[in-house]
Length: 123
Image (tube, rainbow, N blue to C red; front, side):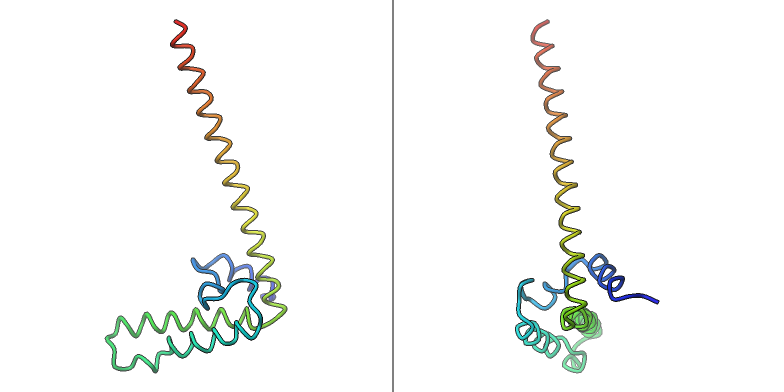
């Protein structure tokens, strides 16, 4: 059985947009701000609102509505939001660490190239 932490982890890593982006709020937003944004996004993307549109538009609206619902299920619950925020923070640290390592490896390559150029000039 999946725990709230497991759901927050998979939720934080499986989508290209984080829940805060889906609802259009900052990560430090209050519960009331998140709730207000959720209601607005749910109304805007609700499938019943797109009954006269073409099939592609309906499908996009339905998918967006599901993302909005998923965001609210995490951010609307204090404990789940806390777990989600921790996972986002962990992912950010990992990303920064990888970016730092890549940056260091690029510096190393440049230094080696400069040394080779200096050796060529000395000859």
